[in-house]
Every structure is written in structure tokens, then in C-alpha cells.
Amino acid sequence: MGNDKKKMGLSGRRNLVGFSFLLPAVLLICFMSFYPMIRALILSFRTGVGVHMKFAGLYNYTRMFQDKVFIQALINNFIYLIIQVPIMLLLALGLAAMLNDSKLKFKGLFRTAIFLPCATSLVSYAIIFRALFALDGFINTMLLKTGIIDMPVNWLGNPVTARVVIIIALIWRWTGYNMVFYLAGLQNIEYNIYEAAKIDGANPFQQFSRITIPLLRPIILLTAIMSTNGTLQLFDESVNLTNGGPANATITMSHYIYKMSFEYSPNFGYATAMSFLVLVLVAVLAFIQMKVGDKR
Image (cartoon, rainbow, N blue to C red; front, side, top):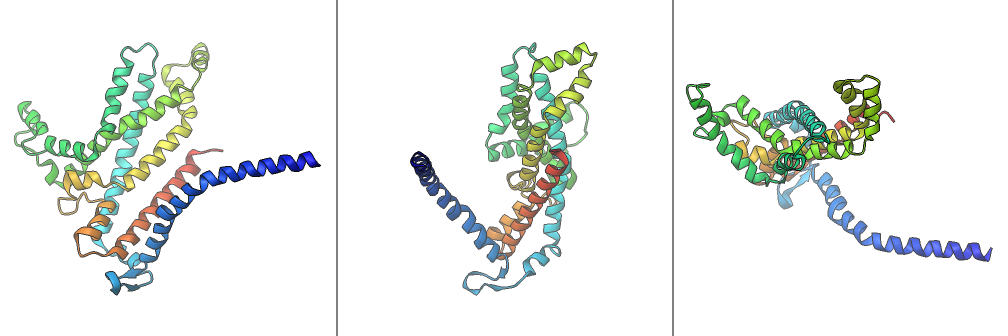
């Protein structure tokens, strides 16, 4: 009994030491993250500015569904989500499968080249794409010289083409980032599995669809959730590429929240309510993806 008490005492002391190391980080997270979230939730039920703010119930939340600009921003976010995310993930998966080939030469060079865009500053790459797709930019110059078009296309001045430019920019920047996750997953799959499949007569497509994709399902789910989260919070491309134009045709929810907070007459209560709607959308879509993608 004496030894048991001594062991329990030692275990308790170890736990105490562990919690003492964790406590500063926990307090910091609570103070820097959870407390502002609670304050923001309270603020979302208020209207007005400064000391004149007053409780307004669900007014800010009902106002969102009557706000044409916010509805347009919501539609834009889902357009980017539905088109860009599947293309990007499929492209990343295909590139990872090709660059995982042990017989491929200069793999390191190709992997680095594809990954480099995601190491580029968000502002810098948006400015580069803005220059590329300008009226006198590289894209129009090449299209004019090859005779594909007769006059310059106003890529950023048309709602449809402006969205296309944003989608292309997102695919260019984030494909390599997701490819790295798939490469890491592929390198954890035993090569013996593929050898056995070859002996059984499986062709490369069957190996990819019957072995690679099922074994990469957790990684695919992870990248899908991260990409959905990032797309619903899209900000830099809308601000730096198109500034939300033309006529709010490319504005995103985060961009509109920023405008409502710092550019228009400040309305922090309404901006906070919109932020919580984004949070709910991210949580709901992540939950759906978990239920659909995770069979455990």
C-alpha cells in the first residue's frame, strides 16, 4: 500500500508539472482567442457606434439576408468553392501521383517548382496576376500576337472573366500546397501493394482508383476541409486583384466584412454578425465533408 501511495504521489507530481507548463499557453489562448470570440458574439447583437451601441436582438442576422451586396458576396464565395476547389484538388492529386514515380528524373526540381507559388506573398502574386491580365498585359499581348483575339480583353472589367482570373490565381497558388500533402501520403503507401496489383493484372488507372485514392482518403478529406475553409474566408485576391469589382461582382464575404468595418461608416455589430455566419458555414461544410468522407 505504501508503494502504491508513493507511485500515485509521483504520478500526481508529474501531472502537476505538466499542467504547470500548459497553463500559460492555455491562459494565453483563452485571453487572445476565446475571450475576443465571446465579446464578438455579444457585439453581433448590437447596433450603433461606440458608446451609442444598443442591443438589437437578431436584427444584424436578419439584415444579412436583405443585403444584396452580402448575398452577392456569398454567391461569389460558393462559385469559387464549387469550381476552384475540385479542380485544384484533382490537379494536385494527379501531379502528386506523377511526381511520386521512382523512375522520374529531376523530381526534386519539379516538386519545388510546383510548390514555390504557395511560398509567394499573397499581395505580391495578386499584383502580378493583375499586371498579367491588364489591358496591355502579357496575356492580351500573347493572344493578340497569336491572332486568337482581335482586340484586348478587359479581363478584370467583366464580371465573368474577373471571376475566372481569381479562380486561375487560386489554382496556381494553392495546387502545390495540396500536392505536398498527397506526396506525403503516397510515400507512406507500401510499394508492395502496387506490385501485387500488377501481378493480378491491374492497369495504372485501376491501381490509382482502387489503391491510391482509398488509401489517401484521410488526406483528401483533410485538404478538402482546409480548402473549403480557406475559400470561404477568401480576402486577398478580392482586395488586390479586382477590389471586389466590377460593381461588387467579385467581392467576397471577408472583403465585405472588412469594408463594413473600416471603409464604410463603421458598423462593427453587423460585420461581426457576418463573421459568425462565415464561421457557421465553415463548420457545417466541414461536418458534412467529415460525414461523407470518413467511413469510420
